[in-house]
Image (tube, rainbow, N blue to C red; front, side):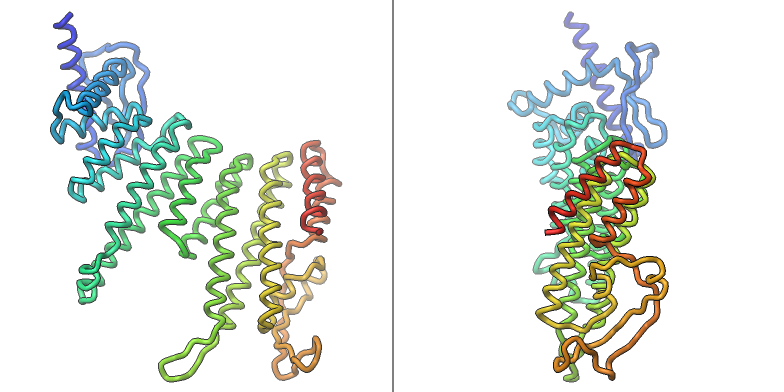
Length: 437
């Protein structure tokens, strides 16, 4: 019996070494899985590496998992010493087989706080592989999401210059240092978005993956309008192919809300005159109008997307919930915008036409004219002739109560799905009870 246990220990040690050697040979492994094999049929290693895919034959798991588990517990209880290399091998193998083992994560935390930054980069890559976003059990996803966030916070701290580094960066070579740090954070941001997208595609309604994606935006791309616009554009196709996945639509709702907030803040900042070094002041009213023009355009395009998906895929409650939330965000932004416009009396642009509640038909849309003018305080509602400008152009159909009622009526008229009719009626009741008040 003792000889058999010794043979098993030797076999398991060899398998652990094979797993870690596979990572050394190919650090770009992006997927791990089990190979169905009830028993060892050949005298060869159960670790299979093909391109960037790592496979483990299932017969060895019943020997491998208890071995690495006991080794780590003995180390934690200080009954057995493990050197640095052995500790990395044991925790790596254990977490690949059981990502929910918190003790192994804590051991790696302590270990990686003491190693070199280059090894910390390897730690981040390892965290991605053992992340249950790419795992087949959804119950474990929140575990590694916290680990990934811990690593990303460490990376942000590493790229944030200290006082001495700020002095060094004041020199000419500091520009190159700042550029490398920005590129490093940018690569990490893009990698996280890719991992979240892969995870969302692997598991339906992957709430943890989308929540992690929101956290990344809030902590690594706060106030970055380009990233927010890119995310809104890149997820458009995804939600069109997953019309029942509420998590993806919730992410777009977060993007719309963040974009409206950031663009409004930019507009408020640029609206106030700024003093130039030569003593001249420049007002940013035109830039403010430009930003306020973008916000209705975003909501208009999102409502168009909802309309297309609802008509193409009838009977999906997720689409109606998304439309309700988007219209509420639009209504809330419009009310705040009108209140600010009434208190500050800024120059009017064609945005004010979009804020009206009147529905616009196709005939009026083709003949509409945008009016840019400044109100004359001495004349109620009249325009000064010197500042009045008319620009002929198409007027966008905007979301409003009349247009939404028209949409619901059109759906009910040509609807053959009882579920679609129920959702349309519920949406109309919501419009009258919430927005109509």
